[in-house]
Image (cartoon, rainbow, N blue to C red; front, side):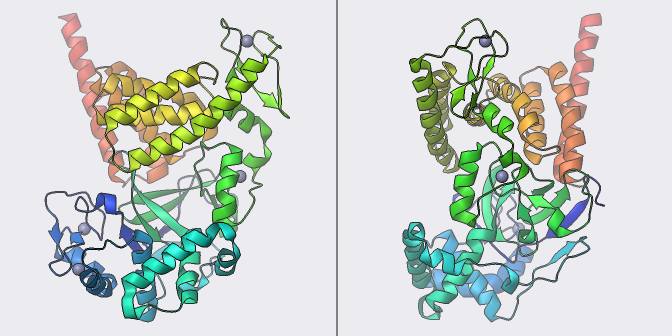
Length: 458
Ligand SMILES: [Zn+2]
Ligand SMILES: [Zn+2]
Ligand SMILES: [Zn+2]
Ligand SMILES: [Zn+2]
């Protein structure tokens, strides 16, 4: 039995690379954010580190890469090709294990060779043709005369597609900072309603039990490979080409959650009821009984869902590329106005995901009241769609608490911060730096409330 919050596994990456978008802001070894104190590798001038210790830690992985970076000088290698080359050289040096610890009873000792590669499937997959060609070209160009056979490259690429993890900085509002191959954690299977959760502390990955797990075996612990706010069709569409399986987890077999995720609002203007579709048919409103749906309503619902999904993906990419937050926010707001006509304001995930982007934009622009409002609207749905103690929910509670304090609404911030503290202790562990941050905010919040109370009594 693994109690909720127990660390099931902790692992350092076998190999990892920092994303180019974070280059110069973070250390290439530990991913710590220190824009002004980084020291560049004098030889390649490409990677940079906090200090000598970080540089030395990375040296064996960087040594060969450093040579190639100098060789191809002006051409920036794609991140995947760098990661592939790091892994290939590491195996060549005879290193095949990563530093990790787990508490599973049935855990088989694993090396990089045990990590599954779908090399053959990838080779035969017509949709992968272009990606495979790019990877082979980029890896060959980067590794020069050290390039191994195409099969060797594809073997590692096949492992990465299935098993690389995106590394997230959860302290400076969650952003993706790099990716890495973690040998142990990728033994766990996927579920869209996972009972094990992944968090990062720098490059260290921790896997914790999100709920009590009856047996301490790795095949009873499930993590999620996809965005849990995506509707079922989108989750499956992502899992099939990337992981070569059709998800039939409990969440995917439960129609009711998916129906709610795609719900529209009652065509009766005075009603806030939820309209769901079963087997392609709109069901009567449970609040007011409205049962007639015009063809205009049906078309509007279908079209709005379609462009919303596309817009979200486009704007999310802009966000990740660090584009102007004011511009992204303006587009989000326009899109939200369009959705407002037909999508359900509380439960529809297309709406929630855009609200999240809008909240992010407001936070970047330090518009705290608006940021708080955007997050508050999405909390009921997130409580329903995320499994208990999911880091996305705990981080949202933290963000909303912070935004409310900065917006001068300390009374409203307090309950959210208390909840965030409890949940973050469970999702990230008491020793995670986020816990200290929430505690500091709580202290700040309480003292503000006291000050205000004193001012009113005087
Ligand atoms: Zn460092
Ligand atoms: Zn270098
Ligand atoms: Zn599923
Ligand atoms: Zn109604």
